[in-house]
Length: 518
Image (cartoon, rainbow, N blue to C red; front, top):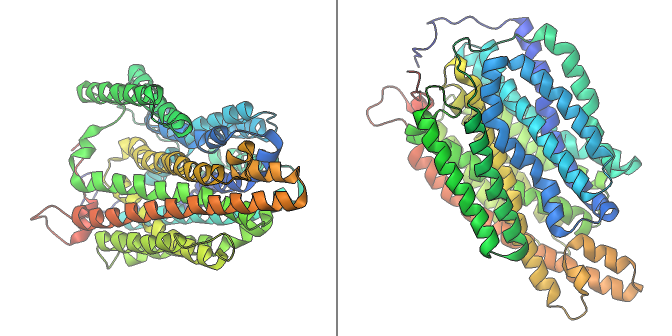
């Protein structure tokens, strides 16, 4: 496949670049670990800080929403001030926010710390992907490097439950956030030597109104979703969502008029590009929502310790790791749309398995179903990322990487919020209908465990049984919704991830997307 943006024979990366890729793997591993270890810590921090159900959702997904909100800004900022510089600034900020989260003494302080972690995290991922594009100009090497990047995400998700479980076995819940400190220290020590600096010399200034408009679009919409989860779609939440949509419309109009926009809308003119971002958004959204329920099922329904829960999650994580490694190899001979569609069909089968999990003997089915889900999600990350990065001129790589990351992060965060609210609603409806269930225990499964611990054994066991059954019903319904979403995405992949009619070459030319710069 030819590329008019590069030389016919672009230079190949040497040992320094491959060592640099190992350095770039550090923040990738960390961000993946940070997601999984938090879920394992939820029962402990719930018992300590006593957050409400909605505060718990804010703790879980404020990180992801603010990453999504700032990714476009940070990706463009890296193109202007230097990608290595932004990476190092973000690493320093992430370490400081991790300390704040580790020693938080209230739900509000932990929410604030998670928000700061999200802002700092937004500097890391687009910088790593953009630097990969700078360091690996030859197409085959770039694809391999992106495969390594995706594999590191998988490895982080695999290591997170184990390391987090070990920390939680010996220390308090906040210790899981301190895992970031040695990782960030090593990154800061090695980056100046092994990573090149790159900035776009022709880049315009950051458009501050666009930054503010992007935040004004995302944050009210997030607030509306949160309030709707708590009170239903009353006037307040609906108004907040509409305000966010209104600012989003103004943001898009402004981008169309700017010579150096914060978001290059020209990329969205290609149907395959739009479909790839849509698949990343909804595909990762189903994973985010289901993972929240599965980790709590293991600990609060099945009674596993954090370490045992981490060990139970090893088979799914191993499936994700293996699929991340094999996807670039398979995509060399099988058209990407068939790889993605097949992976989505596999994830659909996994979610359908979770529909039949029960509160008593459902553990083997839960793990088997989640293995299928994780094996199906990996190709979405690998091929979707290569689709976006490979289609963009080097000087806009930071912005393009941010688009891919925005879809994934916003998808995960939205999945946690929407599916979490759905599962919470099912739990509350089922739990509150039981005559023996106190009102305080009907708020969340963690609250039910806390209430049951203060009651006589027989009554406490009855409350736990009702709560666990209600929680599992919520898991079953959210899994059914996830199966429906991935089934629809399978059709979208088959229909949209293909080259334009009459395009030369094979279906792999789907990765050749014209950009605004062309």
